[in-house]
Length: 146
Image (cartoon, rainbow, N blue to C red; front, side, top):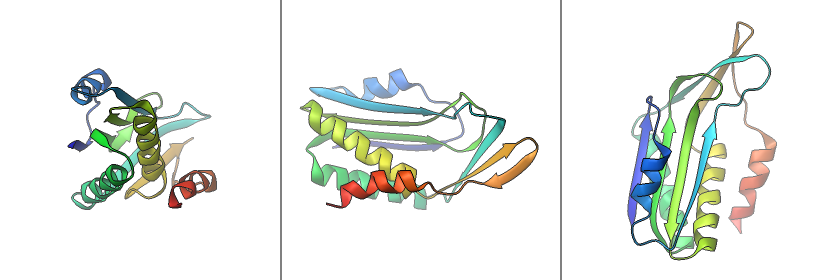
């Protein structure tokens, strides 16, 4: 299986990432997340532990491969300071059939929201604070424990 994992400060090109997934696939499912434009959010800063983050993402891609017959998977996650509206994450999966591609993409995104070693800090109205995990994200990820 072809795998690409990138943790980077620079913006990514979603079209190029999709092109890298589609060779021989019957289906490609993707998710692109953006920093939300909500309220008075000025910046969102993401930190990670280099090396550990990539290993953990690779481990979960391996789990997705064990669950579904994937041909390829890509995870690109940005770190550093981001502004509302900027792309923050790209997840793409390729398989012979759409159900597997969709399920694996959703599985990986649920993992990234709940378990990936990233720390988020937001600045609103001049006040900076760490972002807590959301129970709704944990609930969404719990369905994959079956």
